[in-house]
Image (cartoon, rainbow, N blue to C red):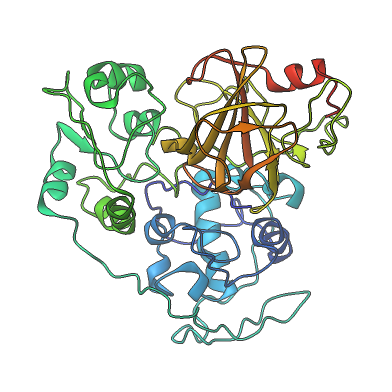
Length: 412
């Protein structure tokens, strides 16, 4: 699963031994992030063994080696990762840095990022365990063209009083990057007519006022194709900013980019069972518990995590926890592809970040019926299932999902 490598002001020069980590540690991080594939490009916006986003790669000087991280050598990727570690610390890889033992203050890695870096078919020489195969260009990769965003967008990003939302932005990150007095709460209050009733749902292209209430409500509506086109240009748009302090790492992370779930330390958080119990309930997926309901942090603009994450890879079967009627099935903005189901007890279950949806609104589903496949759509840093139990079908009415499931006999 991908780590949360957040873009920050570029610090020139390589990391010193005070913030360095040996190659063996970076190998462990890569194993957790990409199964040790230093040249992976699945098309989800994360590249290379350490799962850089294009904006992070650009901001920390990766262009001197290759257009994208997956086209660079292992040594070059580690060299850029050292810079990220120096600025952001191990938290840039929240799910893998701990198990890998990544800390500031380790031994400097023995890497040679400038060795034969002119070709994308250079052979990586540093792997201590397995010799890497020559890098082969991904099949018909889209060249990372530097495209200029339409004039209207450029104008918005260069002004000091308004800001144009880009992919991966959150209100808290915009407020911090632009030094908004009053923080994200003030930013949301001033732009509520633009954003709407949910501060966690901001859309690419929305114009936010940084110096007072927005003049008029501007609702950004984009057809799926148009939205995809905007996302391909996001990296360029961040380049047109007057300040170099680009607000986000990849993905998400419009609303707040949700971190890929952290595996719970509680030894009881084992695999959930999707076998139907006597009360007629099952776990939504077979997977370990990740980031818990109510976990606090600035990565959520509401101040805390509104659901329970399950650590599963893309393509895992997602099942209805009990029988009910599908209320909605489709794109949920920051939640990506989501399904919301109403149950007989009046509660609603939400299944978010799906790679595919297998039901439609109005359809009746049975306990344990597959409703979709897990994925990494919306604002996330890696594949997982975000699961909520709500008292209404809407955001903000969540209750603890684990408590609810256990009360209905589900062993988690």
